[in-house]
Amino acid sequence: MSVLLKDIYNKALVQRLSTNLSQHYPMFQQQEFIQAVLDELWERRELKERMRHITRCVHRFLPLPYTQQLDVLYNIAPGYTGLAGIIFPDFVEVYGLEYYEESVAALAAFTSYSSSEFAVRPFIQLHPAPMMEQMQRWATHENHLLRRLASEGCRPRLPWAIGLPDLRKDPSPVLPILEALKADSSELCTEKRSQ
Image 1 (cartoon, helix red, strand yellow):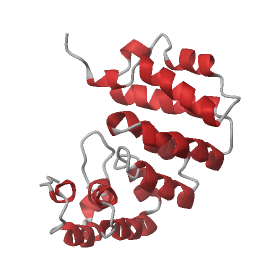
Image 2: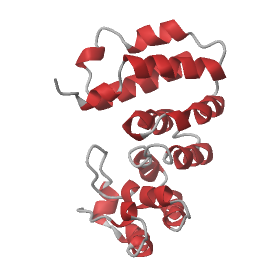
Image 3: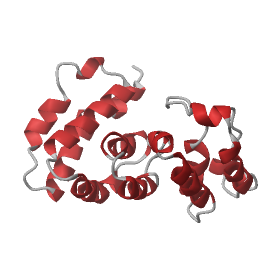
């Protein structure tokens, strides 16, 4: 029997996430959270729907100001890598657009465990000038995962992600980033990209 990609988000992950959240927020309602995530629609949800549903449930059961929610998530994000860990940047995308500085720092931190390349795109749309300056700084960062975020995050077209139509019309803000990365030592940053 083949395993579906959406099953990365499964009951075991939800239970582990619930336990981890309760370790850093003692009033966290573990069983209620698990029941809310694994609701009657869970089996029908696809990968990104499950991710977003978990994000919304974390927000609901972590009734703190956004920056305090981030403090909790910073503590547990290192335990979730790859696609499983994208729930953390997704949280920033959904709830952090009004908190530019805090959210950009969170996206940089969370990309080290999974990838913030999807979540960064609404920030580029909302704050194009400062975000493209930030992407240029990331393009020369010592961490190759931040360099990858710089290149992939501002691709005008990216599979599974919202498009960046302004950068499709005028890709000139992306050119300094690609120039900085064209001879990058990391394969993650220099792999061939189709736009």
